Length: 218
Image (cartoon, rainbow, N blue to C red; front, top):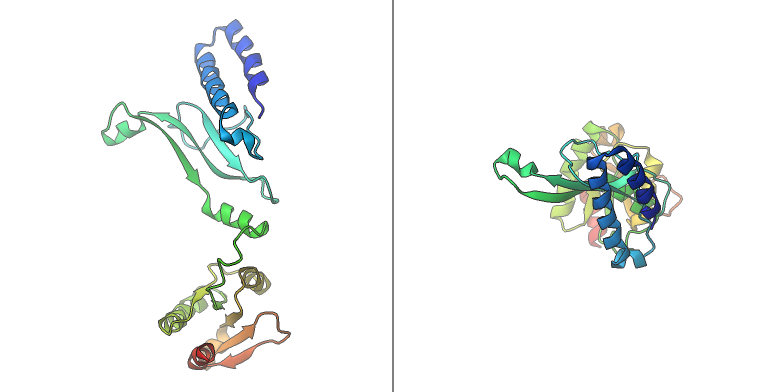
């Protein structure tokens, strides 16, 4: 945990310049670091430090602000952040109510968990079939097939974004999904899906959705 020395140095500068608002801010930061030093977070593998360059994108913050970065992985951007605000609720008619808020970046947290293999092994074990995503038109077509498969009692999902197929295969492998349904323009025109078994050195087999359902029911 770092920041105490910086706060003392800034306090000397603000006192010399009689900057009262700065001194008040440092007093609040001192209270934050004191609380952290005597809490369980100080015993974990975490680093808390004071960053003078930190700024939030919203102007309603009136006290200490904070951001959190992942300790592992290559992502350097924050995964959550927030701070103290006084009387923000006054905008909505509730006066004299202070608070502290925090928001989480779900996409960034997901990327960190995926990169560092932090998802529990059993988390994706229930999903048996992943529909690959080739774009908006194909995804809309797959949603209809996805409903049929789910109504048949088969756990399935559609990859959320249009990205390169190898990345979607990697996603399936990491989540332990055994099959990927590939539905491009050719499959749409022929009324079939190309079913690929993960881990098998084959391009996949063209099948009707009814045959896919029958295969999973066996």
